[in-house]
Image 1 (tube, rainbow, N blue to C red):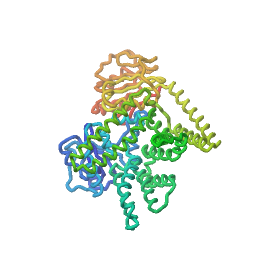
Image 2 (image 1 turned 30 degrees about the vertical axis):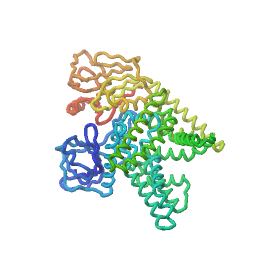
Image 3 (image 1 turned 45 degrees about the horizontal axis):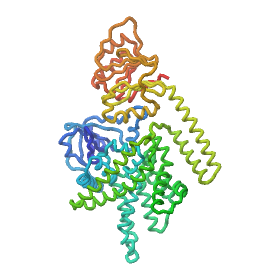
Image 4 (image 1 turned 90 degrees about the horizontal axis):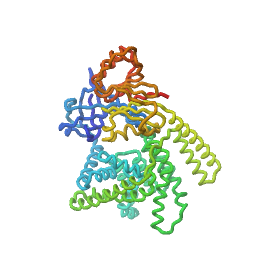
Length: 596
């Protein structure tokens, strides 16, 4: 396979990652094969010769991108498919050959070089790992250096939107460009060409920043909206905001229809629509004469308005709600705006190192203060309402509730009240049914976690865990792999559970017998075969399938993600010959056994 690296390499804990465009498949002949592939390179000194546009050739067979299959987990396979990516491959230093003559597009090379120059300036002048990671994300959307715990703190306090490049950032860039070009705007009568030259400079600045920031859906939406505003002002025509929003969404979906399923796209448009619809009614509730207090109230009104239509999506995607979002946004939003302007100033004077160092220290202090404020708010009691779980139908009904209630309160309309009541009734019925189902559920879940044994025994709204809890607690394993499943099933950890007891390697759970083989075990022969409903093979489990089948009557075998890969092919052959059903978690994802 001959491919071209489509972006600079990104360092990961154990490898380097890059997106690549497939050019040709080479067999008996050279076959053009357009598409994309994710490549992971083993960390090696030779990797430094690779960059955007490098062409490599390799023979290792790419693997399909798969989901973990863990209940409630993120659908990474669909996410990649919407981006045109279906395969990935891991390459060691001897698995590929670097070809001469890079294949680069000049404009993309300019964008990548510009991003790298900005990163170098920030890394030279911003001190502190957390502070630098946030500065990079805030200015150009570079998130590879972000501290994961810090991001979670921002999410728990309702200000994670300031990390994602969005309308706030584009609005500041738009204001800054208008301010800097104001002298040219005043002279457009003397120089007619400035009538078009000034807006052209503004549009160029907006779109260069958008591309520099990674061209995420929220950035493109904002850039398109402000582009419409600039063009409308220049033509002395102001389009209604709803038309501008609809037009920008239409253009983005023409470019990439799959953006409709992108959470960032949905949240971005929901927030703007919500502000447009609800800001004025909320702001008019309180009349304040003092200018400073009035500005403070308006900022809070914007925050409240944005939350109304994003609430169902926030619960659906993230299963939590930040209770102190008003307090955090009141400080973090203006402070982040000041930091963003300071970072732009830092990049402008980056060549004046003594002055840039002073500005960098000031920015580091401001970012540190904002981080500490956010972490302090997160530490307050009841800072976040966690464990919220709604399905797609419930999300739709919640939107209808909001639409009906809003229409009724703002227009005093009876149809709005009816819509609210019927939607709320439907939402309540489905919500009650989901809780009743959770109270009666009985499941065994074997999770798909690399090199880790992880099993949940669920009864009602309680669960018992068996596996490598220590290794999961060291990293982010509990939150990434297990938490989504437990939120989905609405369960909490229990110390004990009726109908569950362990004897040697056999677990009895709700009249089901589960045999866990995670080490070399010898089973004595017994008169008569004991029925084993589920055999779970983990870690260095060593057994003879034929002998095991002669002692037990096995109904199902599961090979988890910690079992040795080299032994699997032999075990699978034995299972096929003995006609024992088996489930390979590496290939098929997590195993769920419903007992209810």
